[in-house]
Image (cartoon, rainbow over all chains, first blue to last red; front, side):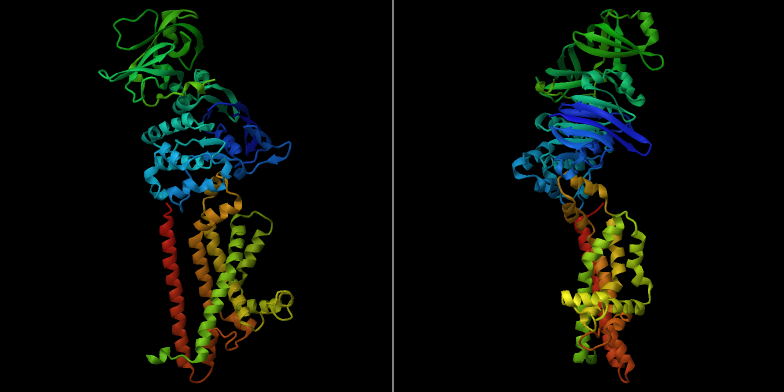
Length: 370
Length: 234
């Protein structure tokens, strides 16, 4: 399944000129507000007709302005989860869920209502009215409603943006399950690095209506220059790891990664399961010798592979730790004091307590990569 | 008080005829009322102001003028009247159907206003969401828009019914005041007031008129509340 987009569209004095292609399981459209993410996803869904361009999904041409083709939204079989859940207020949750089923040809119905209800944990809500649901519950029902139309592609437009942190944490695992347990490719709009790093297999970075970069999440997240200024502190290396063992006595989980063992606060994930961690560049210290007498538990030996000037007094240093890249943001003064140069052998140091729910989530299963 | 219920056959006929005329006028106005309200609420076209003005005309014109215009258009020799009589077999002039037409036209602006307001209150984003789930525009209208505007639809229908129950000027101008055919409650009351000793009859019909109108109002309140509770809109 691939999604190909090549469109130009003008809205007042704002123009979107975007071209990208993704075959990823969960492609994030990432960028600051006003970068054209929502316009782009509305174009794919068929809610807006582009001035010019071509959109194809899974070999089906949805829009081709040259051929005068515009498939109306109800024929596209593309599910959409909106930021404001947009449930039907006059129907029960169960009727909301079943709505799309009517319009799906019987032969193409693959979504099973019991499976979806179980996946999203909404079984106890079926008889309720949307007005009686919390924000997080509404969003889960909206996801279920989109899934039960058996879409060929699922679009999610900032589904967590209107929720508080607790609700976000409640829904993120469901989206991870969606990504890992269903076969539907997902295009996910977000301006949050935490969400993108945790969920995406691929990232398309949008800036002022144009694609600034696109590629696998691990690669894009290291390009701190692509991140919006207010989110830059959240940027850093994204590592896909697996649970090695749990250390119940100290309340920690040990993850295995290419860089070495990573100790994080205790996770509920079973041993062997994939876990994705984001190591914020600002959380990484650099030592030129093996540190002793230091409280930090995670020390990765490596070699400096990149040095880039950062914002203000900072520099961004990429460290190749046995094939995994760890990103560190330090001051230019420290760099000069330590004499850090390309190729220099160093140790990247990360405190266990810098890992939290926002940067530790379920990893993509192995076959999802590539 | 027994004189109150002791209605003469002609009086009963006026009551029955009024209810029939008002009901037919209300039901027949609903489909065009919804269509026009939809066009006015959502359409962007040249002549929208003109259409809006045309719909509201019966509200601002003297009813006698509306009645006379109906007579010119839908009377036996009127262009529309002759056409309908010849091709479909519907005759309006001096028939109860003409009374229903006059009442429907007079109530139409009230009905359209109520429905239009409720259509404008519908969140179009919800309709777009239904579209992404595979519903074509007709299904979206039937399963989303129509249920959401139901309270407005009920309010518009009741307004139209109430207006029809009270309509006098346009009806009497268009189809006259023929007992058993076009003599509705207001016409009958008017007739009673024109003859000596008709006070008791006029009062009886007046009270009946009040009862029917109040019943319609209460029914609409109950219905609207039930629909509202079922929907539980935030």
